[in-house]
Length: 184
Image 1: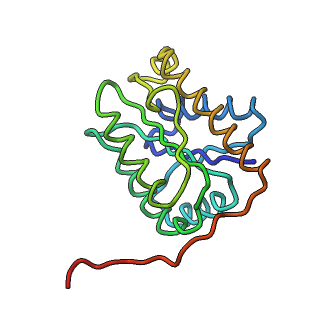
Image 2 (image 1 turned 90 degrees about the vertical axis):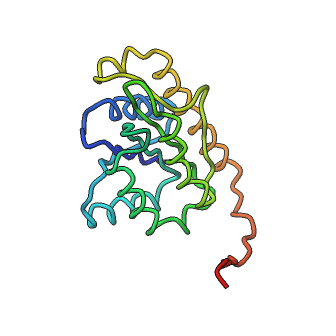
């Protein structure tokens, strides 16, 4: 069982990374492997991430909040990634995590979760919206509620992944996709 954590921040060891690290530590304590991948504009790096993600049980995308949205890096990476993997992510787990100084978190959180819902993934939540607050990694670590939210999210992800694996069920029947064009 493995979860891929994507750091969509241009700062590799910043606030978003701090939140993802808390998730990784808790997943490890729950017996789930994880790996943090730093988002990139490089197509080969995106292809490598796609291969790892397709072999995983799910993903967590983390992003700082820029202008009440996910970072441009996270958005580009997810657009490119999901152009490669979207049709193969059905019923894998997905979760979004956002990091902000003060505001805009819910809009960025909503934006990132849309990648999962359109891909028929199981979106895992926590005790609050998956966000941390702070302007530095140290401030994020002092956001007790935010860090608790990350740990709860990780435990919930572990529970869902373990439950799916224990059930041993195949995927439900899927109808052939119908695409409607409203311009006639």
